Length: 346
Image (cartoon, rainbow, N blue to C red; front, side):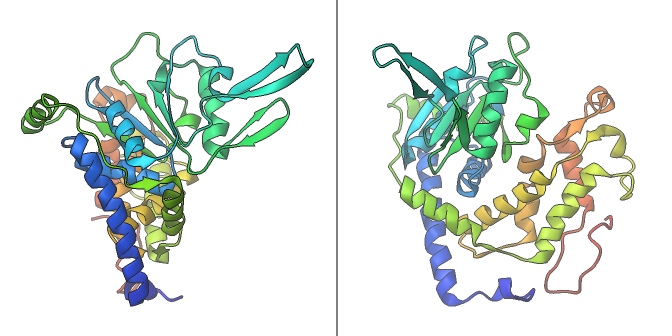
């Protein structure tokens, strides 16, 4: 398949992608019935869902993080469980354990609440390290081992976690290994004045209820369709170039950024950028991803994977500041033209 294949898809494939995109846009519309504002953030959540990843939402109290996830679960007819993470949780509380049955003199396996399609891990940073570690196998391998037996998670399976950035007591910051398991980290800010007025107006007449748009079987089929979206080799190179620029910025000529980065993004970031770009393209009715898809989704996919230095913290430099600088400097490819270096600076 040559480089121009992506830009000249057949009519039949285009119609199919358009229909699939209409379904996902219908899901977005149902979410907007309940969630006022936050359109880009809501779209990123749906991208994560379609890409089959896990989502971390961070925001101040009262900005509808939990409501957004509950609304998504209502619009998609799947099994849904909410787990309120607290400091006294132990791993068996979430993954399950063995229970001895005296009447039969044998052990039974009692599966935990993570065995569902959608898991809302509310305030995940309140859980101790052992509980957070127990989530690693669930999120990365989509399975749990109990009593020498392995239990696979149902499909579709999505962990949507929330955390409050202003809490300092009774919280356990997520380790880097766990943050890397999330496909995207989405920041939820306070609404604008007009949006907040609309929130008050809507809630004064009762909480809106979204209509069911998808079921588990249809969602799984759409996730499979997203994996078939064509990605041009140049788009892949652009995604890798962005990730590499977070690891060795000095070698690539970004010396002003290097002092702020202790550790760059892992290979999961490259895979995540492509998976998210495929899902984003499908939502917009395309059977191919373009460089702009990667550019648009890079902050959500990369921000939680960067480890900043103390100098960055002292200077007030955030991960998003660094990512936006890299996006300005790493050139987007143009597949219709001759290949050129992706490492040039603007």
